[in-house]
Length: 258
Image (cartoon, rainbow, N blue to C red; front, side):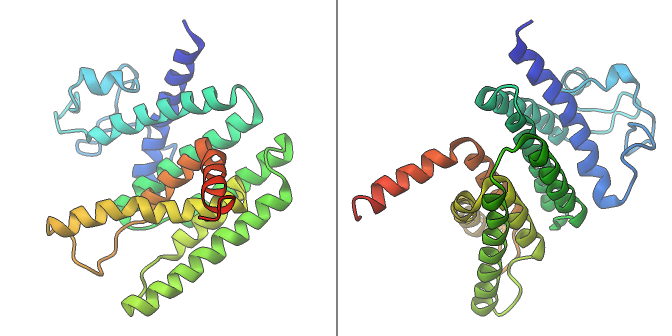
């Protein structure tokens, strides 16, 4: 079997665990006990019905015991994890960078879906990401330490300034501290230049969705919208194409004085 297929399949297995994290962490349930079970009937899921992607498709998105619906998000997260695992492998090969950025992206997936469900970015996830990032960088030296810690400062300070601006404009809290912490830790992985660009991209990515929701009457002006998923999308974009985007910006708008 082609190595790329193995990478994808292993990624879907990790995606299955990410689903566990997404469901259990905000509910403060152990990630290890009890084993996989239906949240409706509490019936334990047999191992042959716990195969990533395949089981959901074979069961048509229903519990094998009580036939209650299983959210298609489980399938989506597994496929997404497999695709990002493959994309990171194709970009970095088997290397420290591959491990460094794969764990970064996995964490962003968990953070994004929990933020969508709860409007919270859990401290434990941000701390985990920061500690693991430092440990991996000690071993593999993926990013220069000066650039990494300047990225922490740049991401955190920029988001604090945006938060203060939002408070002035909207007369209330408009940006959670979880977003500030996420941007700071993401700065460690991307460095100060990329995190500055990526933060603005996160807000840019959110604009079309906000406009559509406002136009459809699903959202009122001033209501809180989770920024985490949009920021995560921008961060992943810069993992793969960050330097290309910065070089394009520099050559187009700075070097030519536009």
